[in-house]
Structure formats: C-alpha cells, structure tokens
Length: 133
Image: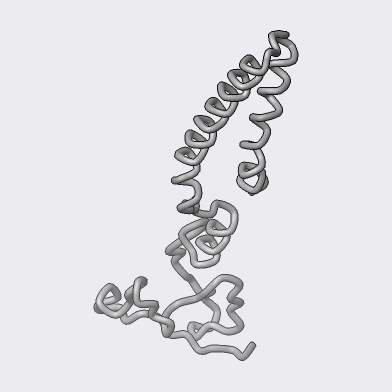
C-alpha cells in the first residue's frame, strides 16, 4: 500500500476536530500502521489507542463470525403445534387399530400391541424431514 500522510490533531481543540464515530481518517492510525518518519525529528511518534479487542471493526467482524446471532425460523416456532397434532393422530390410530382388531376377534395382547404400533409408524413419516433439519 501507499504511504499516507497523517497530521496531529490541533493542540487548541483536539476534541472538536477529532471524532472517532465519524472516522477522522486525517488523524487516525489503523491496525498494522508503521511510522516511517516523524516530523519532530528525534522524538518518537506517539499515538493514543481508542479501541482494542472486540471494539475495533476487525473485532466486530470476528465477533460476528465466532458468536453469530441466533436465527429464528417460522418452522421452529410452529413445529411444536405440528408435533402435538401428529401425536394426537398417532393416539387415535393406535386406539382404532386396537378396536378394529378386537372387533375381528383377536384377543392376544402381543398381537394387538404390535399391530397398533405398526399403525402408529404411519405418523412418523411426515416427521422424518423435520427431524433431519
């Protein structure tokens, strides 16, 4: 990059001239700046650090990458209602499966339970895409 000339803030009213929010580039040094020459000759150049860490623009960028804001999707808000509806449908299917098998003359508990559970698996198929997200 090209060398940039920076001037010190005027001694009479430095606060009126320098505004950190507006970014007074004429008086600001940025991260990685190397001072090649000072106008005072033998005296080293002095600068004041205004922000460090997450307060800088690089820090805010890094903070946004490392700690992103939580995203809320409409799917996440309505999924509990869908789960309740499908659970209700599974209970109804379970009850109907047992009632139908009993009316057909099947009285073995093991057979009734397995048939009812297999009927409930029909409710799981709409949930598979929701579980994979």
